Length: 262
Image (cartoon, rainbow, N blue to C red):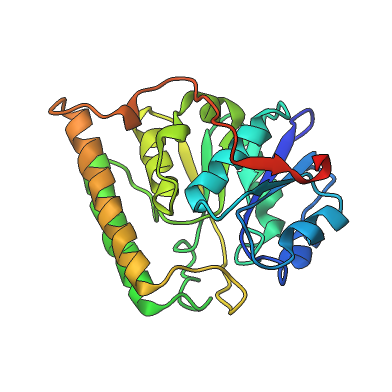
């Protein structure tokens, strides 16, 4: 299924030195051609560790945010001329062992986007997801399914695979530089009719894993609702938003460098 498919894994990193090696060790390099790490101004030795294990490492001059990190990830990934791009967090919250399954779903030609769902299989609570986050996840997902006309188990997972053609057509550079980026990108995919599949993904919540606090979770939730409202208004032709205009994204420059070039 994966023969002849070029697969690039991107890792948006922030203070990930405690879990990076465990994550990388479980990546099946027999099917993954490139692994790229983008360090978003970490305060630990993430970038040095990444370089020591010979990963192509791109470094932001300061902490610009999770969304800006992904913009660099996907921009650099597309330069490797991949067929499939998969985002894997280096905090070991999501299992790298599912990379072949997610890539195969894209390679089959049946899906353009594949999500590693923490809700399918009922593993979220058992994996340590805080109960308030579980409730907000279910509420926000139900609201988005209603407004977007979709039937996804969750919109908020950070484990995602994309066909390269999908990323080339979605204007993700217009999205938020913060955590809302993921949700906006998924809404864009739904709006433009890209086919989205899901796979059950156990998750681990531990002290080393990245997470946002309650205040930022509330801000994120408000942003998710606003994304859904914009989608609904755009779909019903009551308003128009640049977020949903389909075009080739243009990569901004000047805020990062490649570690092995300095």
